[in-house]
Amino acid sequence: MDIISSKIVKTRKDHYCFGCARKILKGNKMQRVKSVDMGSVSTAYWCDVCQKYWNKYMYYDDEIGYGDLRSSDPNGWEEIKKSIENEELIVNVDKRNQIEDTWF
Ligand SMILES: [Zn+2]
Image 1: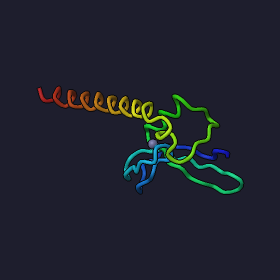
Image 2: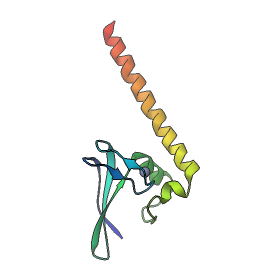
Image 3: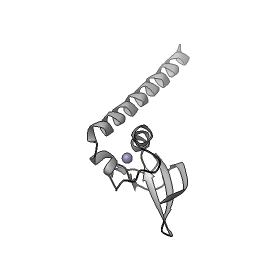
Image 4: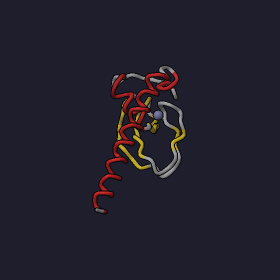
């Protein structure tokens, strides 16, 4: 299997993440990966949790099945998910502080 393109896109439709099999609603950012395997092109979408999980634990040419990232290591996967949610929380708190600053 060869990756022919890989980029972060804001989805216009709902997509299932290849790594965790969760349905990610449209309007979210996902990584779109196009690959070619024995002459046929396929497209897979990855959520931000699975992107981060992959970068941390997997290798470029590892091959997994649909949903395997979460089902084969639910605890590790949940940990990554929590760390992303915490980051988002911090960003939101920062934004709120900035808004309050401008008020006074
Ligand atoms: Zn995922």
